[in-house]
Image 1 (cartoon, helix red, strand yellow):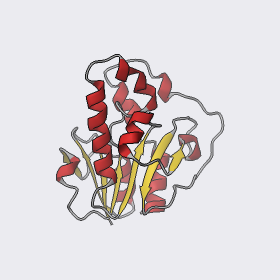
Image 2 (cartoon, helix red, strand yellow):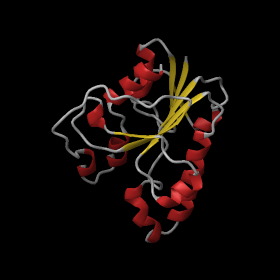
Image 3 (cartoon, helix red, strand yellow):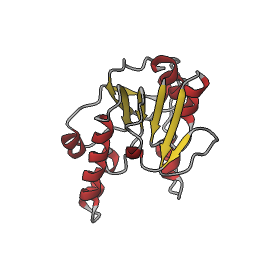
Image 4 (cartoon, helix red, strand yellow):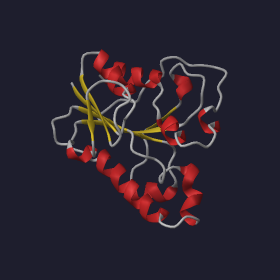
Length: 187
């Protein structure tokens, strides 16, 4: 299959599919962290290139429930939220046969623009990682992702990351167990 992993600079999901023999590409405005097929630029430039499957990780900064309070206190946030929701919706409606779009739990304003609710909510602890981080999946012609290894002793390490220049990047990384489940179940 031709697999596009949109808005991924880490190569984690891309590599999980590549190991299984798929023609997998990551795409992000940032360079890839590891060698592999990567398009650096706007994913909308390559959406019409015959992909069979797209897994998208659009930025959640203006869409997630945890940041809704900033809509009311920081200038320009409403416009950024509207642009982020439009980008999310464009990925969800891309001309690709099978699509999974992931994001944290969204606030009501973004949900209203997108117009669709997530199909599934997954957690890292369902895929071999002892952490909590609710991740919603909007699915098009894909089955729900089935847990592979339930863990106990769960913690919120990701939520407790201290402020830093790399905090957003660190919070956006896909857990390898989730990437492997995606490749095994959707590839």
